[in-house]
Image 1: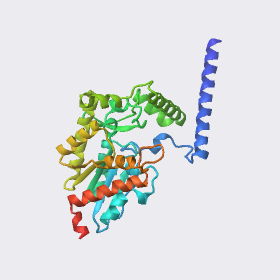
Image 2: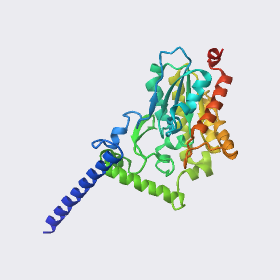
Image 3: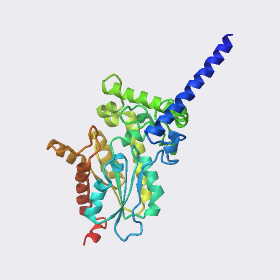
Length: 325
């Protein structure tokens, strides 16, 4: 009798789960314009982890060609395409542009983007946009311990010289399997993780960013992340071959800036770090440079960034002077 009740309970729980799964998919189909049959996995890129925004431009043009690679600041977060920082640069320099912006992308994903498109694009210059959270996103141990900079998606990590795909929360493999096939479980897990972020903001939970701010390079996992990042930047440099690279940061605590300076100097890559201070100065002067309730730039912020980079690129040359004369 007890066994039959257990069996009945199991079947009832399975029925409730399937009913809930179908309900969630119906909701997303009619209210979020999402496919009924697709899972989270369908929005992933087999190599890159998940899909970004790509614009390859006119590859047959005789104009100077700049390839921009970055994360959500390069993706735009909804800012009109023509107002993006790279279009400000394209206008100022009369250059052709190719762009790949992957929200939440780490350095390994950006290397993979370069590896995928560089031979097709054949750029004259590569502009790499970096962000302070790159260090966290480049190391599973840091991202899994972060509440603020955890993208909660399966990402490629560079571990012991190999590319390994993991979900940045424990238990990684189980969550990766469950979330890839069930939209209900993904939604529940995502909601729980966002609730934990709120608890962290209220001081009830600890996030790894605090350790980085306090200890810097003396924090073991941050040091490990800088080593991994350095290796990946070296690979980007090698894959670019004779094509010059310019890197710039969109933000950065001084702990991150110290390491970016060191990494790009060691790899002989020009590093532009004036943009964050210009954004902060503009905000101190009363300008609205970010989107509502966000750290990402609005169109005015993109213009500030684009103007700074345009001037820097003209000063450094990289063959740009030939198209301006």
